[in-house]
Length: 197
Image 1: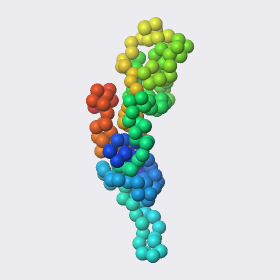
Image 2 (image 1 turned 30 degrees about the vertical axis):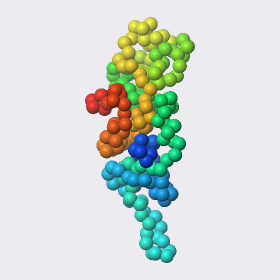
Image 3 (image 1 turned 90 degrees about the vertical axis):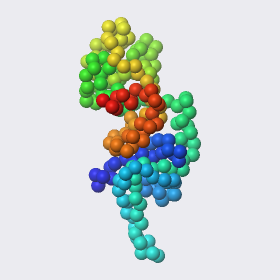
Image 4 (image 1 turned 30 degrees about the horizontal axis):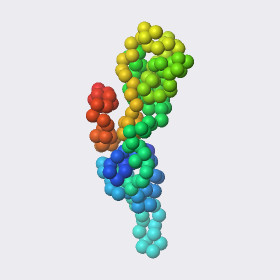
């Protein structure tokens, strides 16, 4: 049963990463004849009931990457104005669970979202204005900018593309899924270097 927890990377027919799906959603896509082709490693065999006429048991072989016949969902994620939703799990993963002030690694529970330009000073809650900070550094910085608090920001925040966001949403990403996703990152993506370390 633990193997069934492995998520499948769903793409559109052109191979653009869309989202992570579980085995039930993968089986449903096969059943609805929405799978154009599959890539990657074999993950599991989903077995169904026995056909009354043929006496054969249905089964679906699921690989780690499924390309599907999708419609407008992919096109809406490709446009230059798409901004993925900001959330702490993706933000902390974007910043590699590092406090971008003191440079230390921390567990999820010890991190917080810091607004470089504070909300109280007109800053916005957007990807380009937030970084991961440990609670101690965030409390010390308080309602000031890094310059006002005399704190060095260790990296420049960025808004992830949709492919980068799909990576940031992933939990246990297999090597073939990671290779596939990285091929869709922009050439100058900060995630390339972070993933090599």
